[in-house]
Image 1 (cartoon, each protein chain N blue to C red):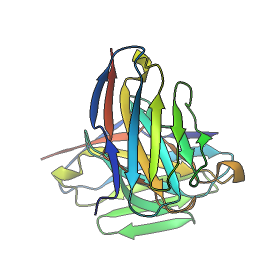
Image 2 (cartoon, one colour):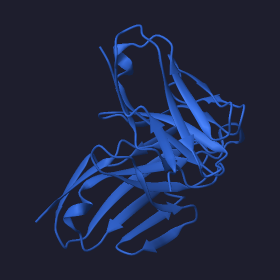
Image 3 (cartoon, rainbow over the protein chains, first blue to last red):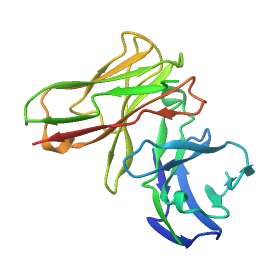
Length: 113
Length: 112
């Protein structure tokens, strides 16, 4: 199975930069996803990493180190609307369960003015 | 674009009643999933399907059944609802096992 760990809560101020870490232990790895979920809404896709390194997409960047079982999501120029839960998810690689996505418990980010 | 649509959005059931949640996607995706989300537990996979006519168990399948008779639809059934099944249910789909997963808007189910 998968063991995915991320902080439960984080706070930051508007305009700042915040880094949300995710560590995982997996018996098979086929990519790591970050999703954003506002209260009462569905998760929405933010980023995907399958190779080591940094993926940048506007104010959001995601980093992966497969050897360390580690990823982070970097949010720059924080806005109030970035207050949400951020979900780290790892995709299984094994043939019989290919495609299964295992989620961490989410990091609730609160952005203060 | 509709994407992934779930019905109903809200439902209250009495213990022992049965119901079916319907998920429909219009993106021609092969893979479909049902997750439940509980406070402090994150999203947990109930059942999934890798194509029409196929289903497989996820992490927490007990008490649920599913069917994928048509490619665009994935049904989640509760034969005898229990209070422990009070949760938010999310359907999702992806084009393949290596592709991004897209979620529906969620179904809030309360079992009393």
